[in-house]
Length: 568
Ligand SMILES: C[S@@+](CC[C@H](N)C(=O)[O-])C[C@H]1O[C@@H](n2cnc3c(N)ncnc32)[C@H](O)[C@@H]1O
Image (tube, rainbow, N blue to C red; front, side):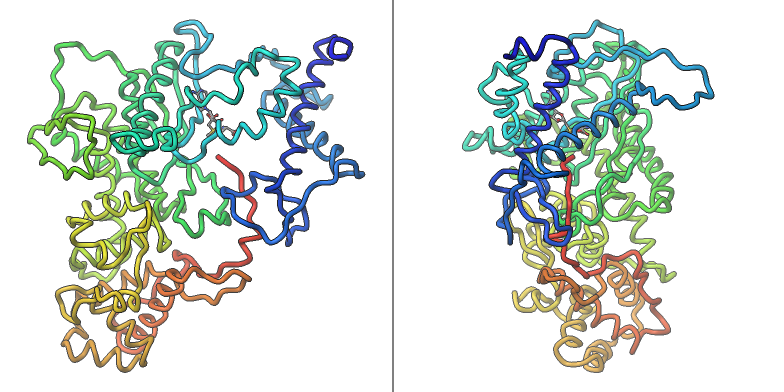
């Protein structure tokens, strides 16, 4: 029957697209399929990034007019049409105002990017959208489709379906599950594996690129470790970053974006093959290059912010120019030895070299520069008093992540930027660690946990949290008296701290949806309201009103049902 149906190329193509359509049908007829109540449609298995329980389950009826098979076939055809349009292969019969270009041949290959069936130095441009470290485990998810495709498209292309399941071995993702229970820590090993795989993929691109060829790599990740691994892979393979562009790619209404401080933009890194450095060339000193990295960031940060990039994305956007200077200056070494980090932060496999320089050094310089810039923005009060490290950490954490929960790895790096030891000075004082995340505490939680210091000039965050707690539990007048009795009512550092805090805390908008707002977010919003009342009562003349539009509203509409996500 197969021989009868798949006689010509057109038959084979039609059968292939029908196989894809059948996979789409399965995606809407599995146990994880739910009823999207507000849109009144069936939502597919991969519509969310989790396996949570749903209010209502559903399955798509296969044979119903304009639904089921008709719908999946129509959608597959539509996607195919868009692809053909994108590739410039469409001939829609419309008027042509320029001479038709010859249609270039298109060759599609299914191969691992670390061994391409392409000749050396033959490619002008590589455009790559690699996995973003540990964001999505593509091969594991693909098995859902693979087992069905094997029984449909597999009859036409048996060579592509030799494996029992998809190939997990050559996949370039940081998958800790692959290293579970192994010595050295599963996450650490997964990170190293990703870096090694990306380096060999980049080396392969270098092989196929013409000497003056160009490669664009898209990347985003909120954890700096992922950036360090990617940039180290690029450098290992002999590439330099010559330009970078932040592009807004994520839907802001996504649940995982709103509550978990996820990044919204993807950074496009433009890379070229580095000129070969003569073997006897001396390494440059990082100490000489660092100011140039900071200058490059300073020159771009304003532009990025004016283009509407904020929060963690502002830091990520600035990683591009920082890595550009870094890779252009490579090879680098340190003039002064750096102190050995604590075991927890150290890579257990690599011997510690006090003179070694890594991309992470450039990222840290970028972070410092962005931090300085943001603090200037958040406290417009001309005095610009130094807020104290803990207050600065708290303000910058809210400013960057705009959520009470964010990666612990980032919390640690932010602590380093403001000169604190995270474990000693920050943890259990203003936040707790839960799994891989930290959760910021509001004034009442801090008091309940016994971590609120005194009302004094020593720590303005403690003073303002006391004021917020008093205003929340008693009244605003009592909060004012508290500050007056500590003789801090006109203190310039307190005014600066109040302005900065009001500019980063979530303004308290009542929840409009069915979903209860996150308790930590609600606590912070209550602090905002209490401090804003206090500002109006006691500081109306001295502290400007908060720039609310820049902040996250606490309103959580019916996201649990409404969101419609796509994997990256
Ligand atoms: C960020 S996604 C690309 C998404 C794509 N741009 C799109 O819009 O559908 C990364 C892709 O890289 C693939 N991948 C992972 N390891 C690979 C390897 N060694 N060779 C080629 N592709 C790989 C994953 O399967 C995944 O499809």
